[in-house]
Length: 122
Image (tube, rainbow, N blue to C red; front, side):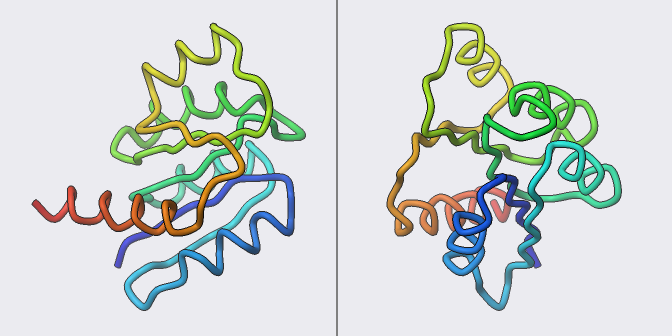
């Protein structure tokens, strides 16, 4: 079973992502802070993480860097509706699997999750 972590401070957006990724072969966990995300990856490995840049407690790029140390096999997809600075972009390019600007298509999200699963299977 693949494990997916969703990290965003918008409850409705988390709910939408959670529903979009529901699948019998997928365990989805949603959290709303960077600290909670880091706690999750410390306690158990995740295959995939969708991580918002703008979080209430920590900057998403800082969470991304710490996740890379704690759980280097977790593929992290960064998301934001806001502007991405050059320094953020450099961190994303170095540590993230992919960047998705919000809003994005839920079909695109499902395909991305499926592709990550297929990559790991090979």
